[in-house]
Length: 517
Image (cartoon, rainbow, N blue to C red; front, side):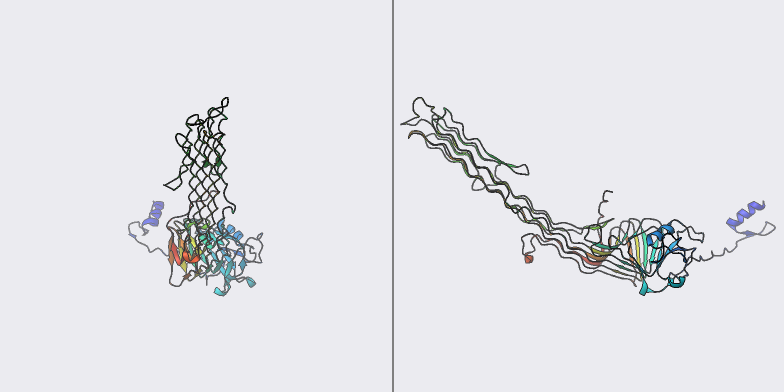
């Protein structure tokens, strides 16, 4: 009975000794934790955190008297142990107001209280003039990882080096991973400058492969039916072929027609590579010249915002130039005839007329230039999907975004080759074979577009919750200009990539896909 009443009292209230009277008791508030309080005034206690100093040693336990040397070691010790107030929270990190040249990953719930006065073992907050600086030479200086607890960054100056992100072009000071929670308080988060994008690769300066000269037709009176000259073929490196037409056969009383060159032309050009007609009542006709391959125009410059992901920002390259069209092969020349109204081949010799020459093959199309690369972005804080960021009494700055790279130039197409000669006539009564047409020239490859200019953003987010309090300063710098299109005058804007965006906070529409690991 007594145990039962005691259990009930813990739930429902208090009871008198007679067990008849029940009444509610006022439950006292919990005692404040010695680890709570304002970071600027709360005492730094060994039971509450791990201590790190530039002059410490990572073999130390991380106490006030024996601090560790690196932030990441202190964070690892803090995340692996609990504060001494019984609340089950990880210990925080107390950091001296010095410089730490290391990239830091902060787990959920681990705080960094920086700007501490370490001389003499005081470890009190010394104010905004001596913030703890996190400034590695490369990489993202500070990452906060996913978790249910919020991490507070207080009294810290996070500085990204120029072009220090994984792409070697962007500069990003801090990233909140998907689902991470962070309060940035009384701190500075400063991105460096982005790097200009690389120019797109130019196609070869030499022309694309030229066509092949057509074969000559056989002379009259050398065969009863002289076969027309066989075609020649140019095989371009993209597998497309240009083929001259067959020469027409030399016949006894009529010559054969030549065939058209390939590939068939697009549209209705003046020259279509048609085969010449063979001799009947009239002499044969030469094959037509093949159509030239189409020149490709300038490709478009980069558009869009780029994407935010675990490695920062990925921009957009300019569009590659397309390959020029292959030149059509010339048509084969018509064949001649061996017997006319007056004369013929000599008795005892073959009676066939001269064969037509085959058409020359066309030149290959030139390759297109490669699009210019994007300029690097400058972003103070990147907040990814499901993350929660609050900026309080802090400064977050973007710097200068890089300019997009210029597009690469296209290659000149190869020259078409001449058609083969028709066979010679022997006597007045025999007719000549006709020549094949010339192959068309290959089209010039297209010039490429310029790359996207790099953004300058205080904060860039995608699907995140961001709160910028009134006493915070969040500013962009100058965005980069879009790269020029190849062979385009700057004032024309042809093929130029879009300029980057400069805003204090910019929300992206979609995240970048996760890279393979």
